[in-house]
Image 1 (cartoon, helix red, strand yellow):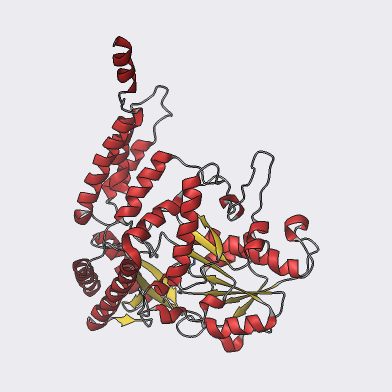
Image 2 (tube, helix red, strand yellow):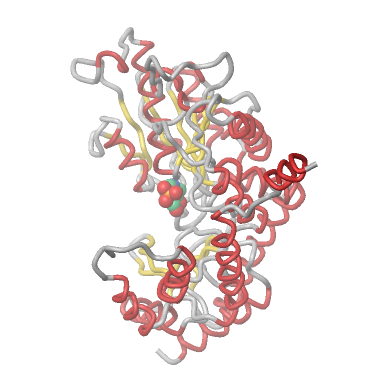
Length: 465
Ligand SMILES: Cc1ncc(COP(=O)(O)O)c(C=O)c1O
């Protein structure tokens, strides 16, 4: 009897030391979310000044974890930018869907290393499912291979390293083994509107940023297919689905057709624009992009997954696996897909799980609706600003709007005041020589009321500048 009680007692569930900390984090996180709507989007001067309080000596003695979190929330929280609220329109930054956020907590609790399937069968399986869902959503072939990386820049890099492997392989040169010194030359073709991340990726992949053939773009930033140079089996063409300023799409059908005729490799930088393919209303913009050889995109942008979640997809899985191969006696691959052979990283967080959760919660219909709703908000911004007498510089094809408030000085000052005012947040850019404010509507959290409130603030500030 006594032995039975003892056994029952020792089986009684004891709280794990992390539970109280998680509960404290949940309370602080909920408080943050509840305050979102009333906050300045940019942190106040007082909040920024308080960051100084982080600069203490590395404490000699331990601090209670709940106290650590309380300090983080008190000093760090107010100095965050309200990106997860409905009125952040800077760069191309999405919010976080509730399911992705919840999954992020859970997956952090699981603390899974996603290098090998044997380390985390659950994550390896979910990666496979999510890759297929992403291909389906984007209207790409469902048998592409790929991996989950930090961001579109790394996804671009991974794809370019794969292209390098394949193109040089066709010339009888194994770059993974022999490197680039002495290798046959590869011609790299980019548009004059190429995103900076492609240039960085070209640099990292050993192609060089300046050793490129630059093709002029049209007024919306689309590559001029009629001005492509001669393509051949040693050519890598980088095209774009969604210009970071205008949202415009390169003419993929024509470019991919020419590339296929001559055996060139086409890579698509579709950091956010590829997701327009998830909407029946916008998928016509993606026509032809499915003919490319590799694609890079971000789930932390338009699909509103947690930071960070870049995705690389390639048609030639063998080239990807050769370019990203890693082997060691203790890293024994199994018979199925091994995550570490698809990304530059070995140890990695389980970011695909958060995307899986977000996509599952939305379903195809919800994802399409998110894309269409944010595009409608962008059109409303354009219409409201035009109505107030300001010039919209781009054709608003998806979720990006460029507006000029007059001279470069005036536009820059209006942007500064909008950021300072705190109702919403937009950044600046220069489009075809003209200084502009860039509005990117990329968050599920943006409501019609957020758009009207932000529009009113923009117009009020511009009129008074
Ligand atoms: C077209 C394009 N490519 C690449 C990137 C870089 O994305 P990331 O910051 O995730 O590397 C962006 C960012 O906005 C983009 O718009």
